Image (cartoon, rainbow, N blue to C red; front, side):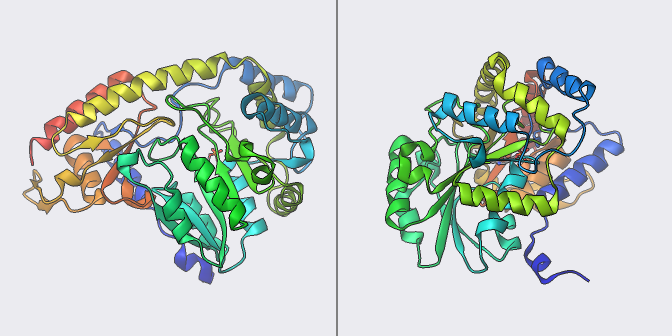
Length: 399
Ligand SMILES: Cc1ncc(COP(=O)(O)O)c(C=O)c1O
């Protein structure tokens, strides 16, 4: 019944955890979730007001496929303001979230058999989207001792005659790495030398707490000509549900991606686009406030995780995830209240144990390319972070 390409689409083990958490909640068990990939803040009022105004003005019809000119101009102004990057509206595409922009990219540029280097750990959708169009994702490890910084030498070794592109994601989901200027410059040299293309997913740019966010596209005209920069309103403006992402890059590629979008979704919601104009162009005060709050919470959660026996966690520099090494728990055995004994051997086992024994939901690292880790989102209140850590501490005492 299903297409061949669906054979390779990995069912997400994170969904299994979420389903289990939902089932427990439905039975009245209160589960603390560190699973969310979205800010716990509300969308700022000025942005909601802009959406209401757009509806009042009747801006409720189809728009240009690639987004209203005002939003593409606002995206250009954002790139100039934050990265010193000069794009024109024709170099910009507005999509239904960054995820959609990335999918438009794989359809527009990746042929079956093309290899794409994906530094690992990685965001789960890159390999899945690539495989859907017959691309070959090649995971290139980064090391925890470097704070999961890019490893230019490993990337160089991974390049073959079939390598078409590299996907960079800084600040990184799930590791929280902010790639160093030195590593980015080395990768930039490799890209030009080997005539590669770069997709730079900068969705967490506004949530950079240490180091400085650098777009590889800003490292010179040769890089800008070979880079698609992808960003979103989702994280910086707490707008995950509005579904506005954007991409900027070489005009021919943007045109091709827009053509793909024209046959699949047409424009993103007109109302959400006008909200995004306000998000990008209005006062950026709330962004800094939210980032300050996440910065404080990351210290709270990382200190708490490192106090747990068998768990260690480096300090993330950006985004809102702690990526904790739980391999110190492997080999320990847990006896459930019903007498069932389980020896923890993987991130999935640890995730299931924390859910059952601590009523805490985390995401297994396996899907992100590391079975030694679990991911915890700290986009949640101090009180829940404290309570979740306490519950985990008590559960680990049972091992
Ligand atoms: C690294 C990364 N890229 C892209 C996205 C997609 O964001 P959206 O489609 O909401 O713009 C996410 C969301 O979790 C992400 O973590």
